[in-house]
Length: 316
Image 1 (spheres, rainbow, N blue to C red):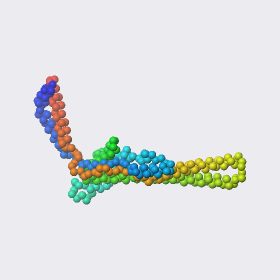
Image 2: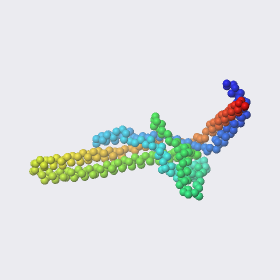
Image 3: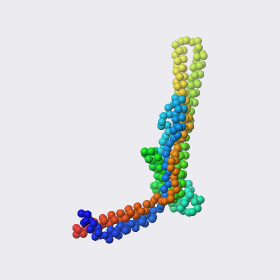
Image 4: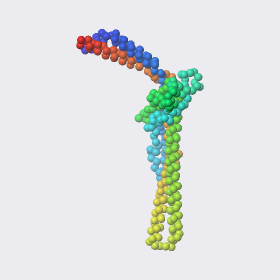
């Protein structure tokens, strides 16, 4: 029963005390060994200008084009992968950053590997490549940058957590600005390529239409006085070709106008609704929590050992 268990634990109180104390000491050492980190958080949303979209939709309807409500592309689904891409990690690793803890003079700048205390081993083959990969792995696996999106309201939380508060803040601002630039370039390039493709097809269609119209015109001029079944059939065939080319040209003209509208629309951007702040207190490690967990583990190990010793003595 419970009383018997308590009596057994009291019997081995020295073991419980020593193991719990040992766990607490190890917890303190671990908490002091873990380098502190400082968190900076920005909250952003993806949105386009609804007023601009409604104006563009009205303009498109005049040319017989239906843009619909999903003309824009929501990039939030792949932003996490963009942040982890080699392009963005290289930007962060190659840039020199100002820090506030390493020295009082914040005008000096350092690369991340200098802040982390990493040194390349130039004696090995391909040392530069291996050193770059080691930096990239530390950045990705160290949970320095996190991305979360609230599924209910779509708000994106961009979290940066580094060993220096100024560094964490500057990287957060840097990532937000470059994510916006990435989206602008990506969507603008896509719209531009689409417009150029449609423009090429439109020029080809207009050329075919002009040729078919000239062929019909020449035929009518040469056969103005001929009224035979063969002449009537040939005239109908040439007129059908002109009508087909007219329809193709008309459809391509609509697509070209739509492509110009897509290019002129407000580009989808990340809008900052809560700017990052310079951290005052560290976010990690939670030293009290680490020590408490270590004490609990020490106590649990002590209780386990006490029960094992008692069980062995009982059997003997």
